[in-house]
Image (cartoon, rainbow, N blue to C red):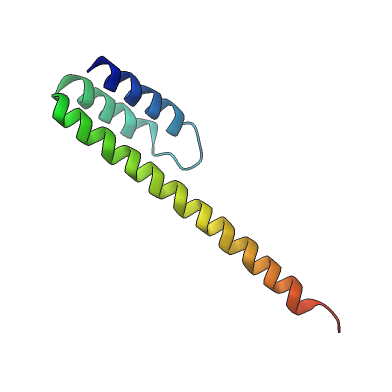
Length: 82
């Protein structure tokens, strides 16, 4: 159980310090609820949901970046003089 709390704390620390993070207040509320009111099953569920949402946000950002770069390359190809 202590391991899960440590992992969750590290997860919150790393994912609240980048551009795709949720507000610090959200994580403060989740962490407070996580440590005081959740049993181990609840803690596991909360952690899995947060990891899943962070993963989806990261994948969405990567796909948007790739889409942007592909559009830029497409523009370069079509703008080349013959």
